[in-house]
Image (tube, rainbow, N blue to C red; front, side, top):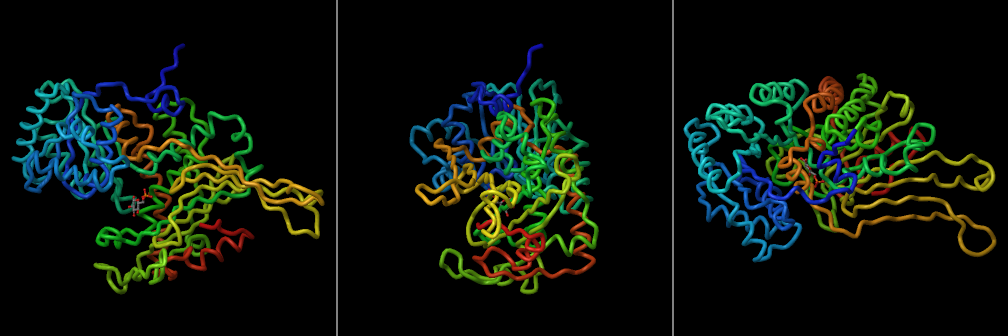
Length: 511
Ligand code: BG6
């Protein structure tokens, strides 16, 4: 029987790189003149154009309130590319990209504006020959999801309405909800208008090259899987440390905090990739089933565990890269008595045969010493005999460190003999760096939306399973009114996080 690899699976397997040429489609960005479009989406689309991934039957239509026209939108895009693109803007590249861009000024809440959108889209489709294939990217605040879905549907823009034979897909950005109930509510709204296979929920961490590579590392090599179990692994650490503070997103962030903003999505998704069983095939749903199993196997937190195994922190003023930065509570638009956490460290367990008894330590924070995202698989120590016999201090354990950013790569810490005599042992680091510049996460994810590959997108059940796990922690914090522990900006987080892991006889890795 022939095996059909999805585009993604094929790409993961390194069999095919480029997209099938000539993807015919119009990408409508609701919120097309917003921050996400400026900083991420338009630069990513520019890079896809440079790669030849967007053919002549491809068009981009920005739709939002700003009073722009096509020319002004092109200028907006050009500014974004000049400031944020992975590859510098060239005139040759721009000449290819600029004609793809169109703009329509309109409101997400006005029914009449969806009619205008329909008209404009129809014109673009007939000029460009996109075959009625449409992707609607909801770069809008969550409260507009339902309104946009209804507006598009009422205008007959979704699916096979009006005899359209093309595909329709929608892309939804995080945050999907604020808690389990609101996430379910958003998903219910989406399911009124779209089938699950039309919905692409983005978690941009899944588009990061190293995260995507985790499956290849694990399942395209024979040396890792046999030792990827509680028999050999002592514990796993997943760290996403940022130097940035809350920036301009105070209104959103102060209501969210690090647990909702980072752990519920990015860290749990990375955890799934590290801990999942081999999927039964490379089909997107097989991969997503395997990830869901991890979330469903997480040991739920009891209220009494939360105090012991979850630490919340908030940054105070301090020095980051030698520069003085303000405390979270002194940031613009943050209440001076805010108790929102900007740091979380937690210990969790996956209760299945592979991982029983192995702690997974997760940690994320803003205004930390360095920007460093890493997964570290810490193997068990060798017995206290032979080279490791007493009274000498114990040999360090082997660690496989998978760096997501900023410096993507893989390193393995082993123990070796230092040259010369007498016999002395010392740490040896085996390092791997890819010499090829990686695409940005949004490049990868936009390609996948356009080609219809859902592997790297979150299914409804996955989002809700992640919220279910997080909800116990939120509930417990609510009941206890727990205040965050303060940590100086530019540090590695509150000392309580170090104390938590030290109770288990372990330490956090240096950032
Ligand atoms: C976003 C969070 O999802 O991810 C931000 O909302 C965070 O708070 C960002 O800064 C981190 O992404 P990256 O790709 O810079 O690590």
